[in-house]
Image 1 (cartoon, one colour):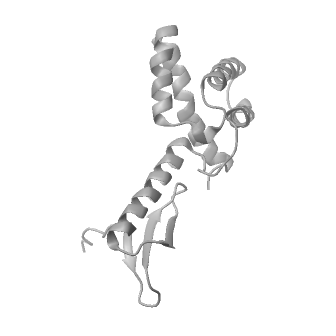
Image 2 (spheres, helix red, strand yellow):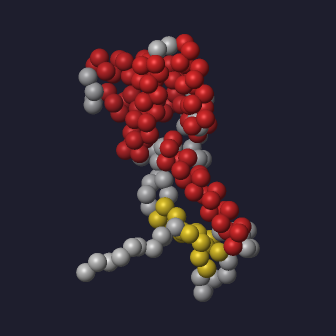
Image 3 (cartoon, helix red, strand yellow):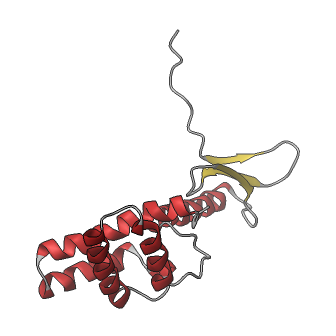
Length: 156
């Protein structure tokens, strides 16, 4: 028997046993979270707070690190190197290390300060200095890093 469509689970709701608005959303690790929205006295304020939460979650998902994390870009890349050493050939490891050294110089020192806008700006300036293939190799590493951070437990 067909089930039909499921209701969207993210959103704002109220509870009978407690006052105020509550939010339900999926965090960066893919787990459902429900929490009270402190300071939301109207439905509009609650929606704004949920939108801010979802923005933070999508940023965490994109970067692969928690907003409050103080890990430096160099430390993050060093962990990634250790993670990759046993998984790839020596030639690929040397190439990856060179790319990561370049990215450490060009990206912000704190990993949480890396944004999509900063990566796009880096790409446009790097296109002027090196070949397109080099830029694509350099900028594909952050995507691989994001997945590795999830596997290494650097994200919730």
